[in-house]
Amino acid sequence: MERKVRVRFAPSPTGPLHIGGVRTALYNYLFARRNGGDMILRIEDTDSRRFVPGAEDYINESLKWLGIKIDEGVKEGGAYGPYKQSERRDIYRKYVQQLLDTDKAYIAFDTPEELDAARATTPNFQYDASTRGSMRNSLTLPKDEVEKLIKDGAQYVVRFKIEPGKDVVVNDQIRGEVKINSSILDDKVLYKSADDLPTYHLANIVDDHLMEVTHVIRGEEWLPSAPLHKLLYEAFGWADTQPQFVHLPLLLKPVGNGKLSKRDGDKLGFPVFPLEWNDPKSGETSSGYREKGYLPEAVVNFLALLGWNPGDDSELMSMDELIQKFSFEHCSKAGAKFDYQKGIWFNHEYLMKKPNKELAELFKPILTKKGITGFSDEYIATALGMVKGRSNLIPDLWTQADFFFTAPESYAEKDVKKRWNEDTPRIMAELISVLKGIEDMTSANAEKIVLDWIAEKGYHLGNVMNAFRLAVVGACRGPHMFDITELMPKNEIIARIQKAIETIK
Image (cartoon, rainbow, N blue to C red; front, side):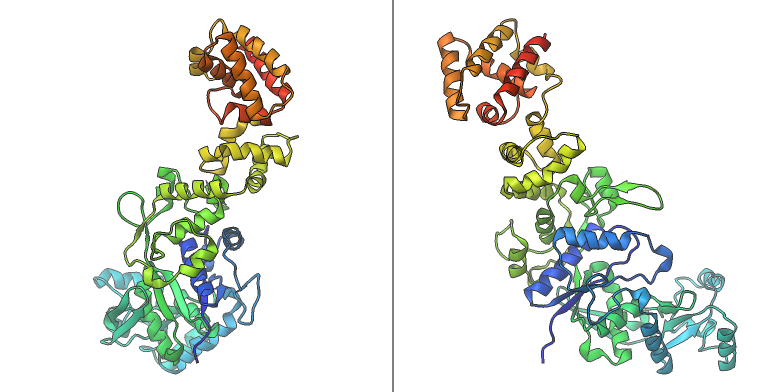
């Protein structure tokens, strides 16, 4: 009987969620939904020394913002919990003991100093079948001495006993068959008595088995661990239920070679975290896609296409469309360059598609922060609709639409020099009289009346209209002038022209 698809995203709460981790979570989610499966969020917090307060909440909030819905997890609950590894100590002890009892693992008492000495005397030292016999462990020490050391509270680790000379074959859904000889593997630490916690290698194997995970979808950097994990499945007798491995291509630097890092984002001015992160240790603040003004659906669409393609020419795809098209057949083996400029393009496209009322809700916090009140939702939405074509990110909307909400305090110097001369104040005063006489300020009607007046007076159309725009906007920029004056109250327009007459020299 075919098992129900179950995937897991298992981050460590050691800091903010990197954008590469976000893509891993997204691919897990797309695959699960495409196949009618479940998405598990498991918190792998066995490395107690690297735990960072707030990181777990950050992970949950990031996934929620992106629309990656979790079926089982610390917050959601589920039949396979607990979903936090530090709460599963009792479970892991049982499986550590099973490996010891079946001679698949052994206890090692080597101190850090002894390990350093071994590394100093043996070139390329690793703890394996060729060196374990010269170290302090349960394979070399008498049984009674081992028992006494444990009874006396000596710190120890449990290491997996790798048998050398065996070809380990891993079938990966993206990379095909991967073969590694066990002789190059070291006897990995599976458990540490110091904090009574397993390491990643043991915990994730046990959890994946007990949580009935069918597919382990993770970054390429974990590929070297796959043979070890396969051997662990065999050691436990779980080979028949071992998940299928899927190792995703790396996200690469936009420029140069190597894996994408925070430094790349700092240098080129783009975020590498989904949300803003305030480091509780250093106090450093790192930018996030949400706070930079990206839309979550744009980030999802952009990330989905870094290492995967839909098999056709589609680019703009909703989450539902991504789910319908997703498969590992179209995933690349090669790393994907992180084209952050393409991410900006995606966001512009989604801004254009976003209904103006929804944009207004996203824009309101900017007005609140600036202390601007008194504008209706309809006014805000209409203003944003006029300028969103010139905007890439949410903050760009303010740059383009600020004059709708606050009168100019100054005027663009280059436009003043080019568009304002000694006759302009007189002509603008006349324009005020014309505007006062217009009852219907709809764009088409006001435009006809003003243009007819300009023609009747024999004024230069460009000079008058640019001076008009300069007075109302503060610069020669913005959407169609009469669309602006249709939305803006007439008394506000007249007040701005009057102020320009009095201010501009």
